[in-house]
Length: 259
Length: 168
Image (tube, rainbow over all chains, first blue to last red):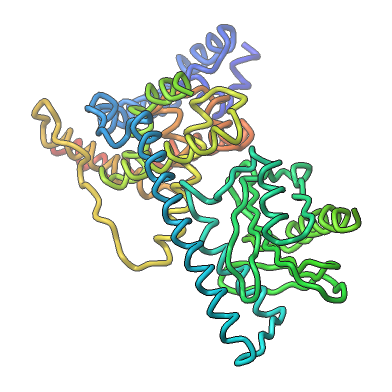
């Protein structure tokens, strides 16, 4: 009796959804027997459920289109990866050609790699690759040792790929990109919500600088110059989060250059 | 990997049902399911889902849906909605058809977070624990969203109820 006085709206919802233990369920049923208005409300909720199922329940009985077969999606994904290997090879040819023509044309222009150039390159790389569902990176983060060796070789620096897992970000992987005067490495991290940040790294000597923020186009970038590397971290996240990630990256990249 | 794919495959019909109810558009719903499956397949190599698969897949799909909505809000183009999601198999009376259409319309007027929560429990038959995990919210928050959704739907549909009844 005392129980039925304490029936809340939450209990009534849980009753409709079958979430109550037998004792509570009995108490709710007794309460409903005494309260026709409440009983009508519960009946209306049950009707809603029935109506929603009448509206959409049949969808689960439809034949599933073949494009939604997980097995088929995996096969298609493999094919696309094969094609992208070909595309990467073609891109490398262009990079080499570009390098040759750059050498031939040296002296005609003075490369002026300002920090602004670096940040805009990093933002462009982020905007291009972060939304990629199928192949955001060339080398997966699972292949960590290979990724480190490959990028270190191409950037001619000893890179230690920062581990940001304590901040909830795991390494998706990395790729190599052409930058204004050299190659650049792009590392991508992702948290459980699917938010991605990218760390853009170019070999670049210069005096160490403080971390600087810039924002634009919905993205925030934190850039800094380490001993032999220019680094930009880009993401669509609050500044404090990015700064924390940047500091963690700085610590681990810096310890590598000391080796 | 292949048993993982088999497990996912058994959940595709439910994902399509939920996506259809969220978007009210067959093509848009199937695009959403496809994106979700591709994400799940890619993510699987990074993180094996620790918990049960169903809430994990629904969580991925709901996040993609929210991203799509955010993008659509920025572009003026409107997707066409199916007025009634199907032709009822049994010829329904005009009154019953109206009630269905009315509920479908009222559902779309709910705040998105209430619609997402109610459909997981009422349409998909998820337990509160599963639905809370799919939405990444505490169970208490889930329960209050469901309670508010039901009352809002009742008010919207009941508002014209007396008229319908008098026709009958």
